[in-house]
Every structure is written in C-alpha cells, then in structure tokens.
Image 1 (tube, rainbow, N blue to C red):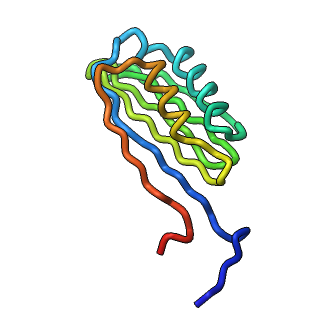
Image 2: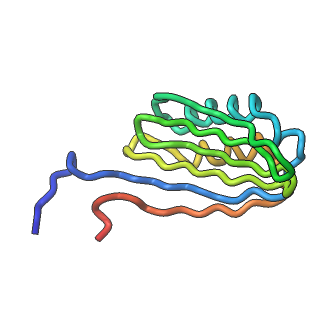
Length: 126
C-alpha cells in the first residue's frame, strides 16, 4: 500500500444544495447573483481565478454564475419560472470553508426552504 504524508492528502469538501421558493426578481438578476458569488468566494477563504456569468433566456430562463477558484469552484444556477436555484461549492484545502459560502448564498437568495448536502472528497477516506 502506498504511504502518504500529510502534505500528499487532498482535503476536499463539497457542499451543495437546492433552494426553493425564491423571489423571482433575485433569481433573474445576473449582477446580483454574480456579486453574491464573489462574496461567497471570500467567505469560503478561496482564491478567485475567474468568474463567468450568463442570463439564460426563455420561459424557463434564469442565471448561471460559475467562479473558478484555485481551490476548485462555486456555482449557482437559477430557474425563474420554478423559483428555484442550485448551489454547488467544492473546495480543496484545510483552510477553506464551503459551509460559510453556502450559508452566505442562502441568506442572499432568501429561499423559503432549502436542502443541503455534504460530501467528503478527501483523498484519505478509504
């Protein structure tokens, strides 16, 4: 069996969830969501590489924002018609806090309900 030192271990933390019954004006506001994702990058103690955002047209339209961070990514996708959003925060490194980023986005989007999930994506969990 390959022996690994502490410096060889990937500490991966994946927090993701579904946000329900959100005010439509927030869900369709690309600049608002982009700003909140930028704030979530700071809350997670991650290092921003690049952020991209799109407004998706059409009846089921919404917004997608993806922040590529040195530690992995933060993504938000919204569906205005369904008053629904998904949030995905995956960070690597013991210094990161994806929970703080997730809770920041929940507070910003103000869903009436949400579900959150966690997956340990570390390399030492066999």
